[in-house]
Amino acid sequence: MIISFRHKGLKLYYDSGNASKLQPKHVAKIRLILTRLDACRSHEEMQVPGYDLHKLSGNLKDFWSVKVNGNYRIIFSFEGENVCNVDYLDYH
Image (tube, rainbow, N blue to C red; front, side):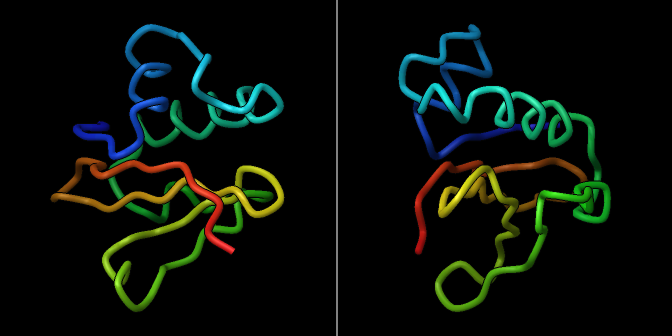
């Protein structure tokens, strides 16, 4: 279950379906990723072809990343079995 967001646009979309703060071409994949994140209890459940799941390092060492499109990623961490700190960014 997702318990917190860093990105206000993702939170708005998750809460109300309003995608106005997200890139329109990414919305369909973001919907799939958020749905899966909301249902998962561990990072292994995000191991889906095309998501390119990987653990981050450095300042983001507690985060996992999945690919949205191009350089855009959704990153997240876990508190127990809950997903938290969900963010949407271009990190390359």
